[in-house]
Length: 47
Image (cartoon, rainbow, N blue to C red):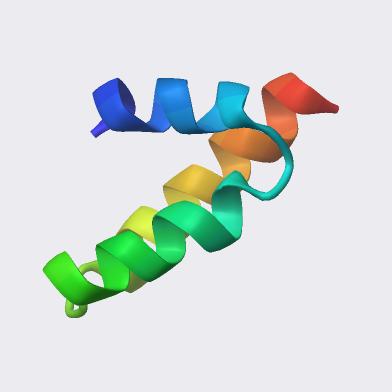
């Protein structure tokens, strides 16, 4: 899961919207779980 999160984080602060839209279509039921991880991983290193 961190494999695809890494490159998205480098994309920028908008990675949340980009990955959320793409993931929502592929894994809607797991969106909540992935969203939490992505938000934490994205904001922690970036901040």
